[in-house]
Amino acid sequence: MRLFDGSSLEEYILGRRRNEIKKLMMDGAYILDISLARVISAIINAERDGRIDPSVSDELIQALSRVPFRRVGIKKHMKSALEISRIGVSAEISLYLAVAKDRGIELVTCDEEVGKTAKILGVKCIVI
Image 1 (cartoon, rainbow, N blue to C red):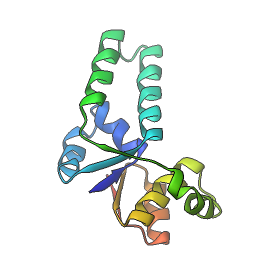
Image 2: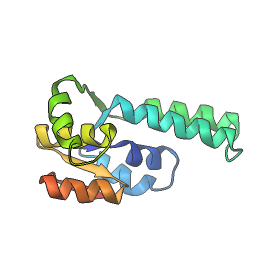
Image 3: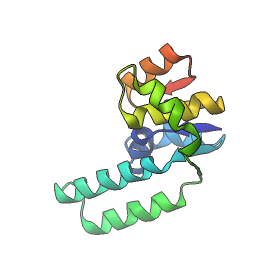
């Protein structure tokens, strides 16, 4: 099992790195609810900017609902996330890192800064 952060889920749904990420999902995928919020925001912004039309937005939301992932609650990981945030990362990033660290699972991201921070913390991480 791997934890997919918002950047990786966004890239998957918007089709930019779908094949690479899909292969990694084959072993099982965890996400946080904040990942869904990030992807929905990206879809809304793409529609507002005229990069996609409303019918594509609808299709992407439907595709998102078909992604075979398990949602992880953050409540148990808030203390760890707070500690991690003290090194200067956002609440969102600290939550991904805390969940991956606490559960001993690999984090998948498209954000190089997340990858660097994961390395500092000893969290297994794949940067795509």
